Length: 121
Image (cartoon, rainbow, N blue to C red; front, side, top):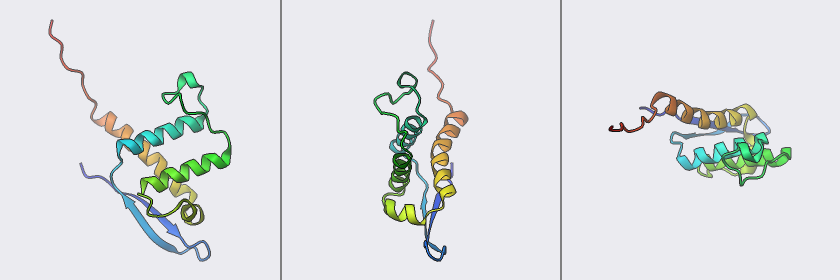
């Protein structure tokens, strides 16, 4: 399976010209877990409906945005700072990256489900 890279472009805040493009092909289980946790915590699901029950919901919009930006920065191996991402990234691109991380994992499960071992009677 050939992995399609997930790309992010940072732009100069004054000129809006591209500064640099970053790519990441591999989504680790650690990153997938972090993205799913963040989705559940931000959705405000009741604790008994969340898999990550120890995480408290984040309702403060500024904290939600900071958590998203930190996740994206971590995904690209901290090649840029949260401040650089905040100032130079397109919002739709950042949100697309979050969706792509969780979406790719969903496709993998759908395309190649693990079958339980056969049982003998």
